[in-house]
Amino acid sequence: DAGVIQSPRHEVTEMGQEVTLRCKPISGHDYLFWYRQTMMRGLELLIYFNNNVPIDDSGMPEDRFSAKMPNASFSTLKIQPSEPRDSAVYFCASSVHRVLNTEAFFGQGTRLTVV
Amino acid sequence: AQSVSQHNHHVILSEAASLELGCNYSYGGTVNLFWYVQYPGQHLQLLLKYFSGDPLVKGIKGFEAEFIKSKFSFNLRKPSVQWSDTAEYFCAVIPSTGFQKLVFGTGTRLLVSP
Picture 1: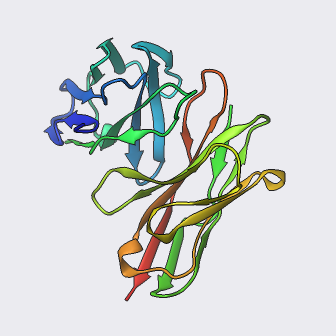
Picture 2: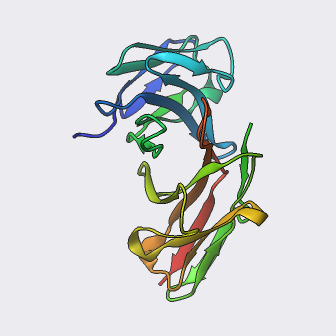
């Protein structure tokens, strides 16, 4: 298995532009998580899905952030409009059903820079 | 909801020194516990995990952690660190039942000098 795949690896955009981050979880995993990592705030959980359904989005910072999971193999995190303070590394992670194994596998991350 | 605290934000050690990183969690029920490592410029990778059974858990690269339920702690240890252990270490917790999220501590940056 190729693991969790995120794209793009790096994104540089201007303030006000829309940014879309993509994630392909490991096949067969029921849970998908979006995290944001910054020097100041560490690793923050933004939202997570179970079987494509958003379970907890309390970590999404503002209405400018939205996440979707249209099917079991794809999720997006969108920021519209983007702001410089959104600059961070965004990680996607997935895990199988909790009864079997709750270890989360992380993607390589997308480093977002908003100028 | 659960929370995790890691007391040491930065640790500097010389090679061959022993390591212990603190992790405490708060949650009233049973939990699963993890330590992840993030090498510079890379993604998080699992070091070890505790679900149940023996509270002393051994992971990869000589790391181990001990779950002490009475202290709500899950400290990470390694008897002799190497330069290649320079990384950021994250403790994480998730309740064992129900729809709950995996929550991470703020991380500890370890620098091992040769």
